[in-house]
Image (cartoon, rainbow over all chains, first blue to last red; front, top):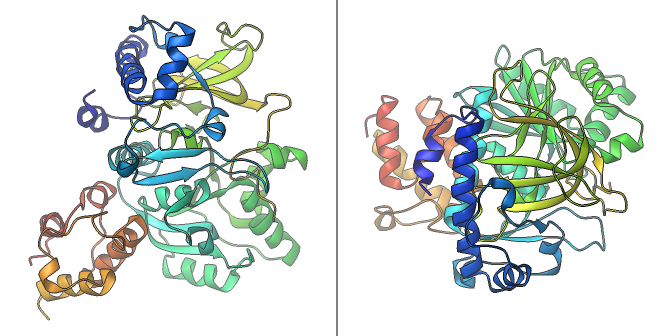
Length: 356
Length: 78
């Protein structure tokens, strides 16, 4: 696969026919690579009788995402492991371990930057992290939460962490940061529940407000905890705007097992697949393909993972395909909505597993 | 200090290396120049030279030498 060319292109510029051709070829190559280099994966495919060549992207054999908790799945020698990323989990819950080599990690970072530049522009903006710097403490065992903060940091300059070591809002520090960058566009990033609890609720309870009229907030990590508090996406946006003045609030969908190629929400409220990844919605009974508008289990495809067999994964999330190539925002590719978790699935996601 | 001395000084203090280590020094080549160290270096460069680096250049800043080329694009002659 010509990654250099792929990563030079624009993230939402491929229409259906072209993208299907790219993914059929790319996923065939990755399936072959991982079959050859990851013994567990190879045995699984042999047992399933998976053919060598795929006819369509949907033919790529999919691993249940939970398998990365059970097995150490690597397609590279151990000494080439550059970073081990762990998914979020609640205390006592097993976490996924994702083994990255330097090339895969670099491509994930590039993909994320290209996707985000489409929303933020090419210029780096002052970066307000709605989390604590302590998350970054351990730099070798990388949590998904730390990876998120650092991955997005490339798009920002002059970072300020809004929460202190105890997850308390550092109001003076944030106000000083905003004062230094008065009149500039501000990029804010955080995980949904932490933003809600430690920024929005904290401001409301203290009777304080921030004024960030030209702010753009990107948040992710799962809605389940907020849904548990009966907070809808609309209410979240309204309360963010009331407490901080930030009107542009975008959710994203992504996971540690396919870092980098996140699905960003556009101004129409739709999650978009970029050229590096795609979604397939399947019926839970027989895993046949859902029609647009029909809720099913989300399968995620990505061209980036070469150091671990994570290019085709069956998630534990439910969603609905809304359309392809015709979102009013102008971005090509599939767009969809995440509607919840598969019943009895473990909680996960940086936001949902937070126990503070 | 000349611009080159300032540039070198940032590497020497950020990454605790010696002047003879600078040629060929690469991003992710030493433990301290990891993604976190990288962001700190970018911030220090921007402050020292009064520039604002674009996202693509922060991604491309892969070595001590490459960094010089990038700074030249921003009118910082070393």
